[in-house]
Length: 260
Image: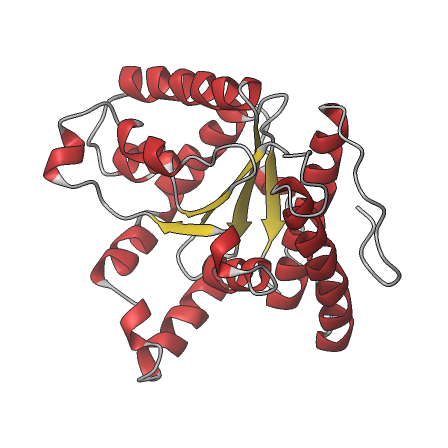
């Protein structure tokens, strides 16, 4: 089993000016691609649905990355789904059941702030499921994603990674700031104590569920400017690549836009 997690270079960084410039270029391109895929640039052309998954350690910056991703897109053209613990009703069904209603149809876009990968992370680490169920669930996730891709969905998956030291600094910052304190919960501290177990589960998750048309992009998120820029530019790259793979004539980028 490879360990791509250990190979993430957390020293990568960008200054704010460079990040702002590149973010603006990527946001313009994202807006263009979103309008194109929704059939609003060429009414006779509707692209595949776009499904973006965000996972990462607590305080790794998922929320900030999602805001930069969606801020240039009309709210009517993107759905952001925050995922928390399953309800009693959801627990009565297969673990993937609760996600199906938000899967984007053709021309739609959904961003998951956490996802079905909680099955291989939280549920595994907290001992809610055993090894046999973990392995079966990983296979079912891969088949679920393949089914969606084959039926016309583009899937892009991000893991935002920070060090133990940086996470503690961000936790302490939240704890001392009245406007951020709501972001910090007892569950966050509990999860932090289990970092070693999460790293083991994460390594397995990435290896077991990285597949041809739904790869994991591992984001060095120690520097927020770098992480946000990497996420948007990578999303453009993967989106353009999948549109072309499906035989669609992707519109040319405008002057100053990120090309993808």
